[in-house]
Image 1 (tube, helix red, strand yellow):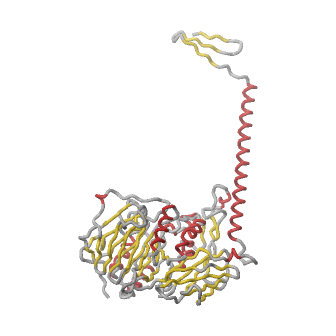
Image 2 (cartoon, helix red, strand yellow):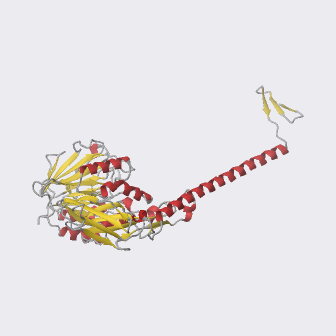
Image 3 (cartoon, one colour):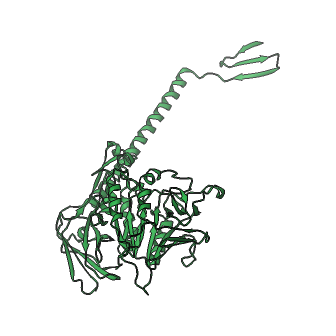
Length: 521
């Protein structure tokens, strides 16, 4: 091997062993290399400056929009002349009042105001009046991110742009009203905020009289705000139910509070015309651990302000709006909280036993309990999450003859035979369970394992969107049905089961007859 040097500084190496030639590029002079380094540094500085300017512009735009939204939403809390929009009531919710002929109405205004609710059974003559004085039964809430990084344009508060302040939610009890007739109400706030006359059907607490149509109750859960949710709401509206029973997870706001507003707008066609009763789900908790900001008052604040306050918890002897009871159409509903203390020494446990001990079985021959987390279910999701509550409360429900437990949480449908402590019973005591967390929320449908893995107590299950219904015909017969969302509105229900005092007749297993009422008064 030998080397040849050229005047230009190029080097050529000839290899005699491989009979090949390799050419090595000449090294640039020092001045040229320095100019290239300077040029690269200049480009990097330019890029960094442009990137910084872009971030500053985006941050300015985002903060400007946020401040504008914040100011427009909060508005002045004092009512100004011509400020009709601030006191115009909206987002109406109706619930039963805990006494025959009474209802609760909640509505929202953008600013606090003195409001009057007129009501009656004749739209042209609203003879009853209830006034809400300034600072009366009105609540609102605000949330503020505990992390000041919300100033960074891509790390806003989880609550909403630059924080959030809800509207002012008013709750009023109206009545007495004649039952089994339409009732009407109108809200007037200040001198400028007057709603249109709203109408809802006021059901009786007792079973239908002989010859009357059955009482229809819609059973929904985990509905949320999607296309599938909207279908569920419209299918429920088409049923014209006497009341809606909601097993929780309503808005799926998940800390972003404007979603509560869009939810209220989405369901208002139902909530203002049909008594709506709910229990809290896990998506209603919205505490610091979930959301990273401090809500005024702790967990469940948005749910309590917007929904739970309108429930008849005081009338049912509860000290907490998260659990309560009420009567409609011959059914005593016990609305339980899966996310409050339910241990044997808890206030909820003591209230449950006290409430069930007072049930008049002549007035309400059927008893239905509602929870969010199911006690019996075979889906691959949320296994065991209701076991602790079941261990604490199942014995109480069995003791007092509860017929049916309705739950959500699992995004699919399942019905369970009448069981007691996991044992399917034949001509013995038992409670039937249904899971209706299939309302349509954004998390989708949860699948079931293979059919051969189903335990004996699982009567029917399907991973599909839908909703349930309960029709009460008289003091001995009530019919549960499940309606698949993909089916035509007029289609035959995909599943059904008859609740009969002392027996449950199962369509999918006609040979099975399960006793569901063990406690006789």
